[in-house]
Length: 252
Image (cartoon, rainbow, N blue to C red):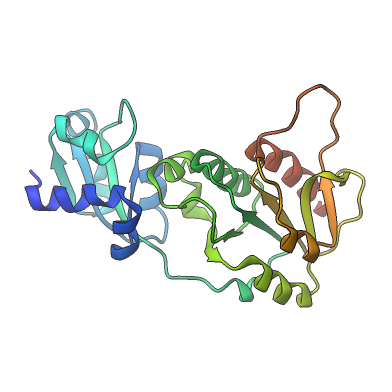
């Protein structure tokens, strides 16, 4: 059984301040933990309840990882879900990446995405469409919050995240490398009709505030999804799936 001090330490990682100090985060749920253990991320420990161990005897042995038992009543203090599955893991942050060295043909850039569920879903969408590189502005919500990690359904472990980036400065640099910058905006041109570049960056911003003037000034073209009904707007995560599908199709 896990010691009180260890449990206190791991539960403290639910707070961003502590995550950033320790450079560690918690991933919960069987699917997410499995993806993490199969990735290149370093896992410090896996935390399970007695009930999980009884139901999944010997399941974690194949990973050769440290496993700590946690009381069912305490486990809820490690997660933010109403009915946790009884398994969580502590992973190290990956080493910081410099977005100036990105060379892939399609890059997703996120500006001021404040909802962790939206951020997690966009990361999952990127993984689905085979997009490796995702650049986050300084004002995006924390990619390692429990809700964001959970919303990615394990896709966080498959992509390269560049976080806390000063977008205007970075965009100015990356434009010199023959990238065409597409900015999603309600006033943009039809995403299905425009001419894309060989190397593209798609900028997605907060649906409540839209792209900032600095980002718009650096964009080559504004794009939008054509509207046929009466909805006021699309959720940014939903919009990302449609836009990425269009951009990937152009590459086929």
